Image: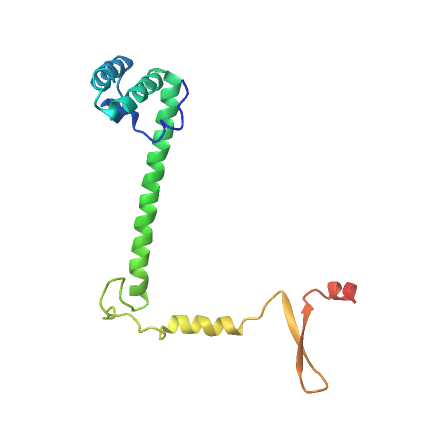
Length: 171
């Protein structure tokens, strides 16, 4: 039997109360015990038993079929790995969010208004100011602007291509 979408989110091993390394014999034994306790004829007053009993049958089919069990285990492992990766990323995001204000001399989220000792006050970091001035002085290597004075004293900017051959073709 193929693993259906309704069985994928469930933990089939926990439903039967067995380990992932259980043999077919152990799976069948656990199924029989659960089936007796959740059989609708033995539990007519329990509506959960009527829902769970057919699921137990599908769980048994999946866990006793070698290819279906391997597919289920592969998907289960991938989901577990994805959940761990997401948790690690969330932890990193939280650390960055908490440390970012401290780097700028501001209080961390939920912190006090005291500045971090040794940090530059906001807006006075000499390294950032120096890099900002250098960036303002840099020219765009792709184009250069040529200024022209027009009749009324207005200045018009005209962008010239970097390659002289390309400008000759355009004219």
